[in-house]
Length: 193
Image (cartoon, rainbow, N blue to C red; front, side, top):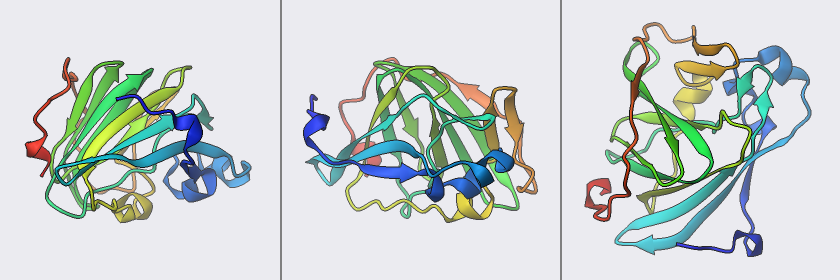
């Protein structure tokens, strides 16, 4: 699907929207309110699903690679991400502030896709020096619940120049495991409903 995004107005996520979820709080407290990433919602609608595109420029948030704020889905359904340009890391976690049951990261590049299973909160990270352009299919009415990430000051791991750092605000976090992305884009999206 090709969309001329230059003719559309994105939603913009600013640093002020995300200061609490960052690893480098010293940097976050004094940095100006930068534009971090751009969200183009509801570009297409099909069978109760919507197609969005998010553009994440290369940037450091202090010691941490730029990322999305992170959210859970209100209902019991998943999401499909597709890397359109660049490469990204998709961190998924299942659990709550007392105990994260599972956490994994998937590194993906252009043409690869990632399935976020139902019940997993997730963030997208751009660890490269190129723009990351990622698309997603999700239920049309999805609003995203940010409360766990806000309360716990981010996901259960931060991705920094020094590597992965556990977020000490969570009581119990397992070792981070890594999965490979799908080498194709699923055509049947019924599993997202």
